[in-house]
Image (cartoon, rainbow, N blue to C red; front, side):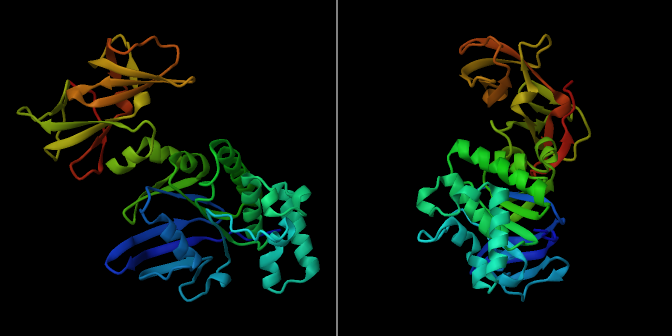
Amino acid sequence: MTPVPQSVSLRGVEKRFGDTVAVAAVDLEVRPGELMVLVGPSGCGKSTLLRLVAGLEEASAGEVWIGGRCVDDVPPGDRDVAMVFQSYALYPHMTVAQNLGFGLRVRGARRAEIETRVGEVATVLGLSGLLSRRPGQLSGGQRQRVALGRAMVRDPGVFLFDEPLSNLDAGLRLRTRDEIAALHRRLGTTMIFVTHDQVEALSLGERVAVMDRGRVLQVGTPNEIYRSPGDLFVAGFVGSPAINRLTLMRDGGGHLAGGPFRLAGDWPFDDATLAVRPEDLTLNAPHADFEAAVIRVEVLGSEQRVHLDGPDDAAWVARVPPTLRVAAGEGIGVSVAWERAHLFGPDGRRAGSAPRPD
């Protein structure tokens, strides 16, 4: 199997259903052999965007290019893509081997070719010992691998994954996620993976596109998305616990002030939002930036999540080591890693790193 990875280019792509805009003027470039993840909340348009690439939906405006050619008038079966859905959609009366080879049989492939490709795919996915079984005799993870294998036998230039792990339990999701990552490293095929799960997005994607309300808000590596969010939505959506926030207003001295903080600078706006990741707070530090009351402590084994009555009574959370002694009801000094704190303007766009307060 030597699939040729293809590029995917979305150029001003829109999709409207009546008066509802599902995808709004999206420009996105997926490189040959790249694993791109589309992530966002339910209803953000990520699955619709995937269906536009597959040809299962027709764009209302813009162009879809695959492998250097516009495919707007090309039917789904001729786009050199294969799609893996959330539902396994296996034929229950067929064996694993028959399910894997079904698409090739429909296309009129010869029996010898079908058997060869099915054998190759089964070896890669660890299904060789299951070829005579039917779907009802398989575990959820095995059924998902059969669904993936059915796409692989076609040797597509682009794999499209529409939330394929959503029906699996937590442990199986982790193992299957690792299998998909290993498969991508082995095949080098272009993959576009849709999920609402930020952990899946950050752990799988070579690059991640964050979507909301039909728009792609930011595209970058997982580290860029997490450490340099382009706007307040991305900052709040990516990361668990969610990023801590505090509203700042310009005071009489020209500073941005809120709670115990006064940030000096020549700011082009009168209000802003300070945002700090939970792991960028240190408790019981020698030089605290503010004092807070501990509301409750979540002990999670590898870490603790300390819920604080933060600045201006804002609910803040700190992620701290499990060895730190802290209890609900006590007061505690909190310091901020200002070199990693973010400042967002009134339009929600990132204005830069927050300076250390006066």
